[in-house]
Amino acid sequence: MTTVSSGTAAAGAGASGADPRRWWVLALLSGLAFMILLDMTIVNVALPRIQGSLGFSEAGLAWVVNGYVLAAGGLLILGGRLADVFGRRRLLLTGVVIFAVSSAVCGAAVSPGMLIAGRFGQGVAEAIAAPASLGLIALLFTDPKERTKALGIWGGLVALGGTLGYVISGVLTDLTSWRWIFYINLPFAALVLLIMPRLVTESRMVRERGQRLDVTGAITSTTGLVAIVYGLLQAAEHPWRSASVVFPLVGGVCLLAATVVVERRARDPLIPLAFFANRTRSVINVVSLFFMAAFISYTFMLTLFEQQVLGYSPLVSGLAWLPLGLAIGVGIGVGTALIPRLGVKAVAAAGFIGAGVGLFLTSTIDVDTRYVSGILPGMIVFGVFAGATMPAATNAALHGVTAQDSSLASGVQNTMQQIGGALGLAVLVTLALRYTDDQLQLGVAAQVAVVSGYVVALRTGAGLMVLGGVLILLLFERVDPELRDPTAEIVGATR
Image 1: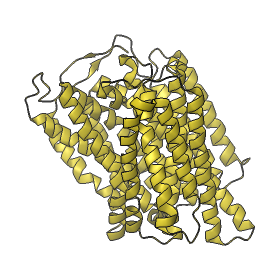
Image 2 (image 1 turned 180 degrees about the horizontal axis):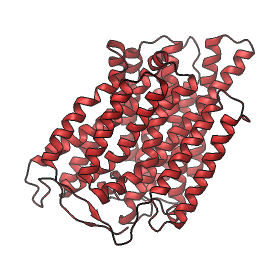
Image 3 (image 1 turned 135 degrees about the vertical axis):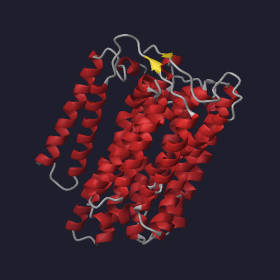
Image 4 (image 1 turned 90 degrees about the vertical axis):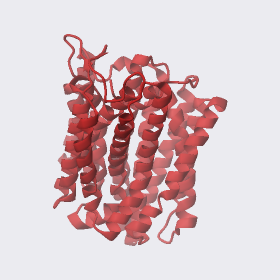
């Protein structure tokens, strides 16, 4: 899509970059990104308390995570297009309003359905606000050095949000109530809505005559994914041949098939099918599904294991995740340093396989496991190798793309990661619950049966990671790391 700017960004986006207000805007945008990613991870530690308070089933509890990631992943690229057309500031503020209202709904939830609806709303808000936020940063900081610094600050706070989510969740859940993990968003959202319009003017792209937004493709793809995830989670409690499993699965597959037809015929598709002609990009997007399926399921099930089997409090469980964040940070640094020496293919493959080994180490847990000897070793191995894959995956996702398509490439990768997390929970949680039921029917003690289900799911996740590494070794083309405009790598869906 050919676009041209129809306006300038906030104060301070001039060529000289002299107006200091742009740094205040960056502070607000970074804080907003921190808050949004925080809410993606903050629920994990609170899940057992949420389950007990609202009466979630084991399979239904997965929707507290899945509702968010499905909505965010399915609508992310559409959100970027909407920001381009209707204005980044307008979409950013709209996303913040939706996020605040959805957070209030989550905090006030009196039933599982109400909480899940709120989580879907939060995911929609991320899909709207995140691309607009990144697009504004790109326009605010026109000097390459300043832009690199600004994106570094933004990215650092986002990474910090992902790590601190577990700790903040533990503190709030233990000392107050799980409801405050959602209410905490409201004051900051109000601050953004109050200050941002004073600092940022509108900016948008002008569509060429006849261009259309591919809303139909976004609706069919997101609805199809929701239906498939719903059917897979229903399989945890119903036979595979039951209507509650078969109908949503078949309906979801039909909707995804319809998406392919829509994208083939659309004049301006969200994701041109020709984009997947590049083998390396296609492979990295497929294995990104494996990566996030294993990663999200690992954090989900290990949290339940720590609190429901080992008896950890939410606060202790939250603190127990700190080594993972540190290990991922180390892994990112190691991976970045090794790529110029060993190449993207070698680092990505080793990262996937090593992360699989970490999950296998974690799968040795039992009802008497101790944190230092039973959980920590696998967590560190998994974190370091998973972190090492991240810069390699970014390079591979951008392999062979033009400057015009770099945003699309990053957006597709981000979308696949979100979808992978949702599908992973649906498949691996269902697998764990079915195996647990089988063990209970054989007379195995309840806690032993539950842990055995987690073990099977963790080992399946380990297998997916190793399979991803093997596919990278077999199918990747040579990928030479290049110095890229950081906006092209980070602004995933602003076009």
